[in-house]
Image 1 (tube, rainbow, N blue to C red):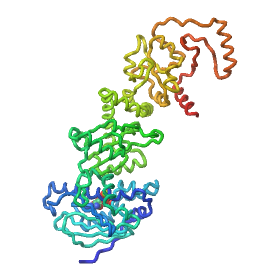
Image 2 (spheres, rainbow, N blue to C red; image 1 turned 180 degrees about the horizontal axis):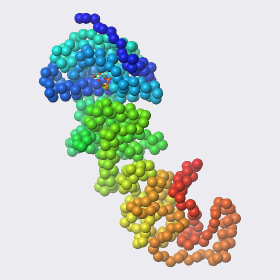
Image 3 (cartoon, protein in one colour; image 1 turned 180 degrees about the vertical axis):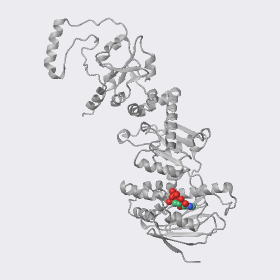
Image 4 (spheres, rainbow, N blue to C red; image 1 turned 135 degrees about the vertical axis):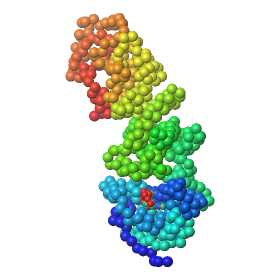
Length: 549
Ligand code: ADP
Ligand code: MG
């Protein structure tokens, strides 16, 4: 057997290794995900090869991944029956081939001071993450090509590696990590099993530890919705979110055309406290070709849907393309056309789903509105593209609806003869809005008024100027022309009494007010404050006031 040959890593790879050696080790466990995803890729490639070529080594071998731990020796071995690597492929793929993405990784890690372990899988250099936990790595492999010899690759993670001839009869790859002292904790079956469940549970080939399969294997979202039981959705949700509550609602969508898209999205039962303030972005896992390529994919749904959690899986996102997408998402906000289509489909379906929920399960929808209505309001203000859809989801309290919540369409259907505008009243709380003196002339005419009692309502109004041709008007505006005939209210003061009162008020209030007028509309309330500024900035001013700015 010839002696192993020593070779140098390419410069970019050396830099990657350097960064890994000096990075913060908060998330080292991802090394296992990277090894498993490589094994899974290799098995996928073999499956594909075997579609047209039966002349492969060990055609009968089970397609699977095996993980073994040696506690004494402090080693972990990950073995697969995938394509394997020839000696030359080892040299190329594990050390010398030019990779523009390696450079991109180095740049990202340096510029953003990003946690290297978090982003490494996205740059086509995932294999090297083994050096976060290992001080020596041995790869023994035999290619599926029947005449290829087995080869061994070894490195201690410096600037070089060796390749030599190996004894390895079976097809596939076996990677042994000699753990660093400070990573000895990983030489533990239980721990590895947890990591597998967390990161690789839905890898589509069995992962064995000993005799036992530890992953679920078949992705729920790739099954036909009618084949999946409620209990399974629940367990998927809990596994993904660590939330012990059941989700409020789920949307399962599985199609191959016109785009390959398999997704399960959950509306949680509760909004986390402070979610709005902390602005946690969507917790959506993005899979492509059975590999988890992003833990929290942004931009697959509009930002107002960021409370939704789940998984999106599409074969149409080739790994490379999605990596590029991921890369650019780190910096600029560009999306591939496939991502845009996915977003459009998911957004449309989610809106449809919520409208159906409102029709068929009003109580559930009410619970949804209570927890997440604030996001819908935010969407109305911020997402022009989806505004029409969002308006359908809005629910309001009104002066005549009691405890029921109504839609804008309900309101429109209940307008009185001659009414051409939608009226709302704003208050610091729902109760304050309900008892506003501005309501007198509306109550007298039997005109329904929407009640706005929270901060978000004012914000929402910046995007809600009208609905189906009907303008929204604040009841405190001075120039409203109300429909319906009512007798003018009886004046309670004569002219002389009024001027005396007005003088006294003017003396007390001084500069705070501009003018005092006898009201022609008040009935049950003695006074109201009106503004002569009806510009659209008024609600925003009000918000600023409430925020104390
Ligand atoms: P990526 O998986 O994104 O290509 P990695 O750094 O994880 O990047 O892996 C580099 C390459 O090494 C892979 O593309 C593949 O060619 C090869 N490789 C790694 N692990 C295996 C394996 N278990 N079987 C066959 N080839 C492998
Ligand atoms: Mg990989």
